[in-house]
Amino acid sequence: MPLLDALARFNDAHPWSHNAHFHPWIMRRLPDRFDRALDVGCGSGDLARLLATRATHVHGIDSDERIIARARESTGPGLPVSFTVADALTYDEGGRYDVITCVAVLHHLPLTEALTRFRGQLAPGGTLVVVGLTREDTRVQTLLGLASVPLNLITGWIRNRGRRAPRPLAMTAPTRPADVPYTEFAREARRLLPGVRLRRRLFWRYSLVWKKVREDAGPGSGSTT
Ligand SMILES: C[S@@+](CC[C@H](N)C(=O)[O-])C[C@H]1O[C@@H](n2cnc3c(N)ncnc32)[C@H](O)[C@@H]1O
Image 1 (cartoon, helix red, strand yellow):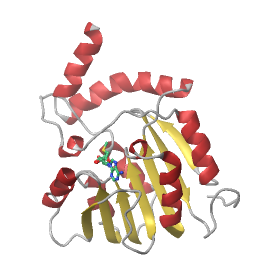
Image 2 (cartoon, protein in one colour):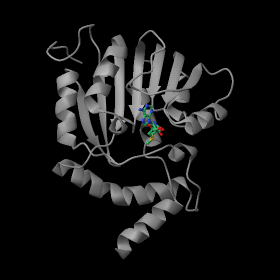
Image 3 (cartoon, rainbow, N blue to C red):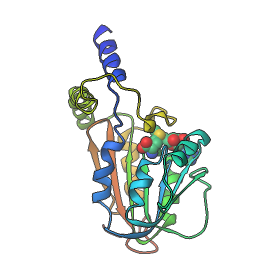
């Protein structure tokens, strides 16, 4: 369709990261200081570096070697952050995390396994923040998606000061389409993470925030946020 082609051409010429857009929001969900943090599927490392301004140490892991090399190149010495090529489902360097973040990655992973794993890796009192993508299957998502089309154009224009621009480094990380519908995702998240807060967001994203109040926080534990 000519209109869709024109939109795609405009967006390609004025790119901006929908994921990085949520970083300030993520940081507002977290304590002022925390000890250990894990950013799962860290891509070029922007969020891991931001977390490192508040953490004792941040582990950024990603299964893609090239993007981890770029994350390392973009990180100055002195920041308490390390980047490792690793799979989110098997990575284990011992210990648990006070903060786990996962932005635009959960749809790359088997949902139940990944959420169960994050729950186990989080220390009691810790916070899990996920920003992700699902297949659209609710009216709210459709409306937010429609509203996102003009906002996407305007934001791309403003952020790039009306000029054509190359894609930011963060947008060179591997991507894939989301195939799990939102309702299925939400059902599973509520089952595995009692008291989880879920919201559908602009720019084709949802957010998930979960605080692990005690060790046995899991299905049937009745924990709250
Ligand atoms: C869309 S990118 C998002 C990158 C980054 N979180 C951001 O917000 O810009 C998805 C990332 O997940 C990584 N990824 C996919 N499957 C993974 C897995 N099993 N373990 C670790 N990382 C994975 C990809 O390599 C890619 O860098």
